[in-house]
Length: 289
Image (cartoon, rainbow, N blue to C red):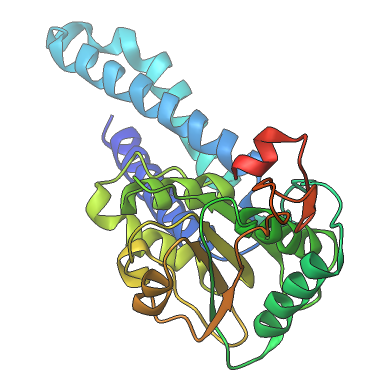
C-alpha cells in the first residue's frame, strides 16, 4: 500500500506538471495538444479515483483481513507504473497546426469608383507599417460596415502581412466583455473557466505573436484596448474601428482617419441614388448597415 500510494502521488504530480506545461504551450499560436496526451490525462484522472477508493477500503478493513486486498493493490500498482512510463511523451505534448485565417463574409460586389476609392484608402492606411489603428467614420448607412467586410475578406483570402481577420459587431450598446467574448470565440478560447478580471490578460497572451486584423464595427463609445486585451504591434495585430463619430475614433487614438460620406441624393427627388459604395437600393438589409 505504501508503494502504491507513493507511485500514485508521483503520477498525480506528473499530471499536474503536464497540465501546466500544456497551458503554457497552448498560449502560443498554432499549438494544440495531442489527442494521446488528452486521453492520458483522462485515464490518469480515472486511475486516481480508483486508487483513492481502494486505499479507503483497505484502511477500513480489519487488520487481519487486509491480505484479501493484496491482489487488487498489486494490480493497481502495476497500472500506475505503466501510466508513469506512458507519460514520458518524448516527442512533445502538442502539435503544430495551421491557424485558420477566418471565414469570408461575402458582402457583395463593390460597385462604382467611389466605393473602390474608399476601400483602397483604408487599405493603404492599413499597409503603412507605422499605422496600427485606422478609424473609419461616417453617419449610419454610409457604408462603413460594407467596406470593412471587404477589407476583412481580402485579408482572409490572401494577404501575407496578416494571418487572418476577425470582425466584431460591437454595436452602440457593446461592452468590454462582449468584445472579449467575440475575440475569444474567434480564437477558440474558453474564458468561462476563469474570472472575467483575467479575460484581458488571457486574450493578450493568446494574441501574442499573432498577426491578425481586428475590426471593431459600429463602435458607439471609445474603448481601452489595454482593458480588452488587444496589444498592437508593427509586425503583429492591427485594428480598424468603424464609428458614426469622428471623436470616438480620435479618442481610441486611431493613427489614420477615413471619412465615408453620406450617400448622395438625386436632385429634387430626395431619393438615394441606386448605387452608392456598392449597395443596391433594393437591398434594404444591406442599406440599413
